[in-house]
Length: 104
Image (cartoon, rainbow, N blue to C red; front, side, top):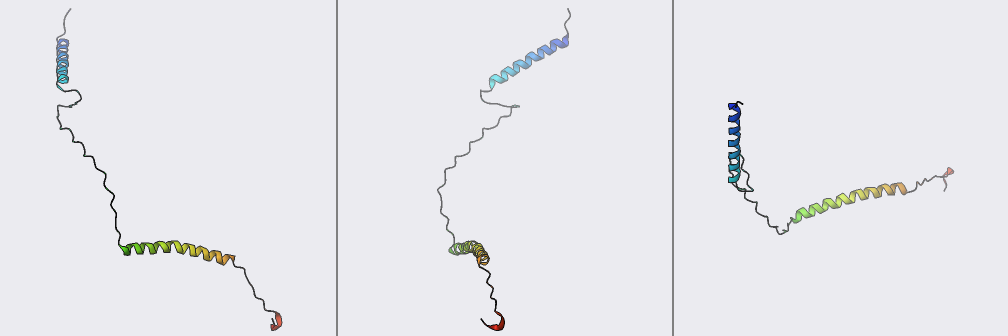
């Protein structure tokens, strides 16, 4: 029975790879993963933002007055238009017919 030197070399190489893999796994502490032996510092956790206190915003009085003017016009014009249409449609047609011979 003859031995193939290539098969023996392959078997020796596989055993060496398994041994080096086992040694590398024993060196790394559990929970850490190092790919390609690159060591990176752990990311610092983001600071927890504290809830801000609500702040009041003061508007200029002229801005508030102008805004209220536009709101009142925007509400009153459509209502006035609808009222005018309803009024024009509900009034009866009155025809004055003058009697012949000019007398009432």
